[in-house]
Image 1 (cartoon, one colour):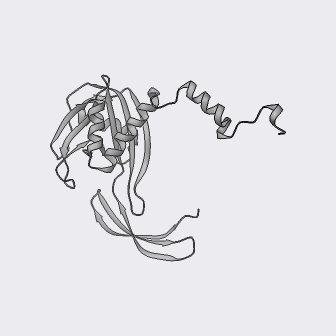
Image 2: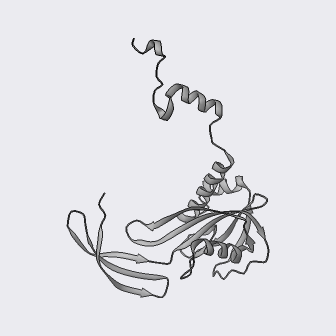
Image 3: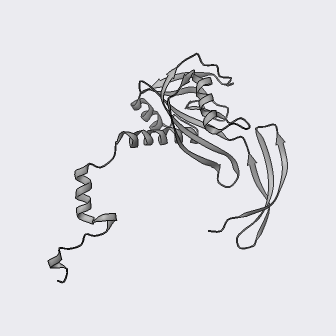
Length: 215
């Protein structure tokens, strides 16, 4: 499929490091020109599902200015200029919780706004987390660090307690990755063999026995 092409960009608002708004001039694949297409730039960020050595899930109970009431939240934060996403994830885990993790898995990078840009979210799973010091976060909101069991986390997701899309996403993707790593949800050898016997390799119907092929 053919992509849109940016012909010109003009800054219309510069509000510190956290918000820039631009007008773009865009050419569509059919040749049409769109002027003053709003484009929003905020810092890229990371979110982390962190799992302790004991199998508990680290998250916060807190408030956010744009969220109604309290919400649950994972470890997260803005990527500093020149900082790599994984380095930011490690730093934020340490600063916000006082934990360090032995194993890190990338869960993907995602565009926040499909039409307006906004930012790129980098999501991670951190396993084997162990507390090494007291947290020293500089967040403006009050936070309470929680250690949830798997069942408590799943119930919180089902209730919608993670009220920001990226936060619910990193937790859901993290659980999926943990299930894949442990083999949960994979069909047994017997079921796979039976499935191959019904459909043949790569989902195709099996060939009939040699004596029946000409019938």
